[in-house]
Length: 276
Image (cartoon, rainbow, N blue to C red):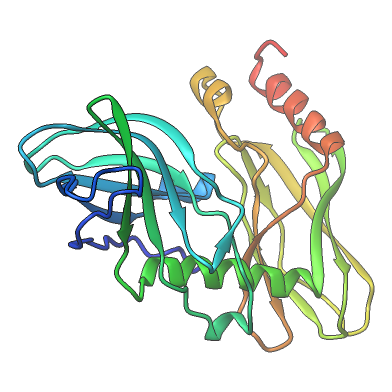
């Protein structure tokens, strides 16, 4: 089964530390933070820093970054976020990068993380570092998910290929499992489509020692309303669950080459009677 990242809040109660450029007697920046992830964030590989303001005046945040030794490649994002006082929570969506796999995925725990903010204080900016409580169940889950996928990719990958129109207007296609290492059998237990596409295939197994396996599948349109077609963020992100040997199935993604993406784009517009 797909082990969906846990949706939790982590409350930060510590004081914010001002950067060296600020006077030593500069007042505390009265921010609190929570780290959460919702379903829409999962698609975009982001989390939200939810900020609360314990002071008596709004605080303007102009840059935000999530830092942890367990994740790499995210970096800061510029923002123009006004954090109001009171019980209002203000979200800043931010990438968390890719997990650093320093051992077997199931044994990993994320190192301490910090929310690093730049806030406007009058005519200058101040750096605010909020140490997120440790351990974090959310970051643990995200780290393990990344490293589980990396472990599977070292044994086999899945690629969409062989798209061809059927007499009924749907598409025939193939998910090709290609061995990248090891000799263990690899079971495809299930796959899914996206907002725009349904994918249907029966479970199959790449035999021990075999190099490739072509899994036949059928693709059809899932939604045809112009809003869905025009606004979908990742139409070609198709989940697949692969199990190596006796291990549980792991959620990963089917690689969809550019040629297949172009064929899918043309198909859904043709199938739905929309302009290309």
